[in-house]
Image 1 (cartoon, rainbow, N blue to C red):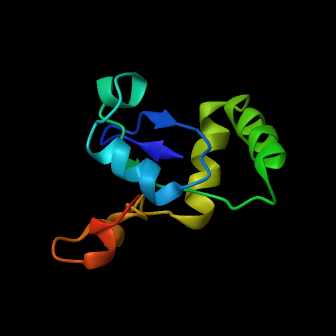
Image 2: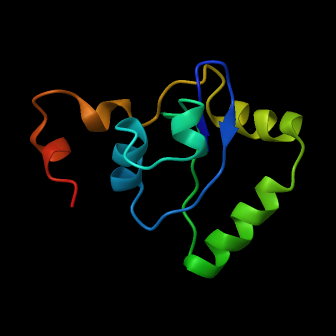
Image 3: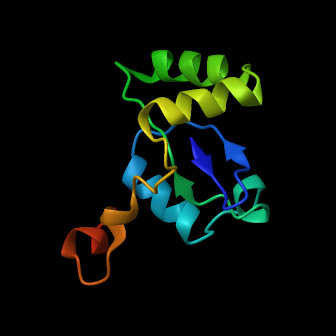
Length: 98
């Protein structure tokens, strides 16, 4: 789950979280996250495969905003960017995201 500075929320799924976060941070794709500047990873889960990931994404998307906020705050009460360390300047691992 991603958030903007004003806490606009976005829920999605991917098979490569680091690559996808790079795309969000760099506003690679036009759409909701680019329009609302949703670039902060505030919550994520690992699943056993694509079917369970899609099922979980749909479940969370169906929740109320307050329930989504409560989920984020169970693991990340300060709404820190959980991907921040992945993209520090000079970190060679952040340069090879393919």
